[in-house]
Image 1: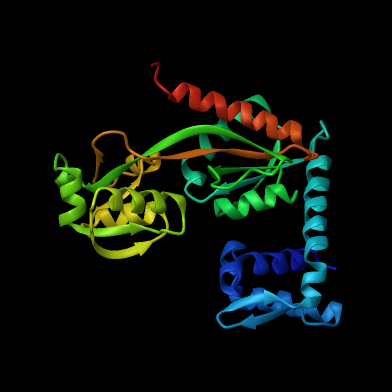
Image 2: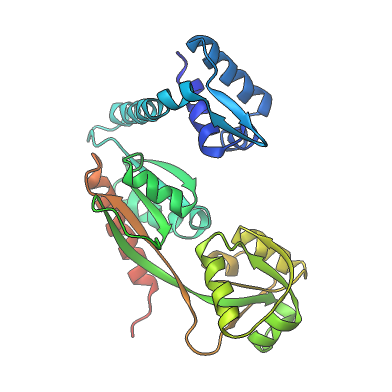
Length: 295
């Protein structure tokens, strides 16, 4: 059996669509469909079924799903062990999307300086889903927005940094009143299904601000690009990558104490790679302690 076919099957289930899974694996949709068909032929049964615009596993697909995930983890560990004389295996790390370009790079730079032979597998995703995967043992740890639910006893949460909400506007609007901008300018809303968008919604409601919404979208970099093109303003977490992007943006602080989005690491206490997760956590703490100015 070709392990890449199993990888494709799991990717489709996680993404909920063939097209999105193909994008994540850098394949064409036709190639992805061919892989799934070949796997179904080997098993002699359908593994996926369409449900409206989404794709979900059949009963047979559900039966093999977790075993497939386990097999893929074992294969990655075998590769890491074969290439690493320390035989520590591979750190399976989840990272929520905006942290891929802000939190992850400086931590990995320190990590590889200290452990040049370490192997890391990175799984991007939404914070809630990554927390579930850590609790289920599918990932050793994950960089996530602070969970708004009770952490399972098999996991630990470690805060790393905070991002206060700020008004993000075109550079030509620098110096203007933040509340006036939110009330008067076209508003690009950060998706309310994620915590940052929920914090922004709550803040505007508490301050009786009713913005002129132009669109709602997930993705901080996408919103920043829209603002750079003069399409509106937004209320966003103070995400470092925006200010180093070269875009014409103004950061306008809110009056008083702003709500904050907390970023941290959730790790599984029973993970077979707990030592690797601990090493990553220590380097992450070092990165953010250096970036935090003294009180």
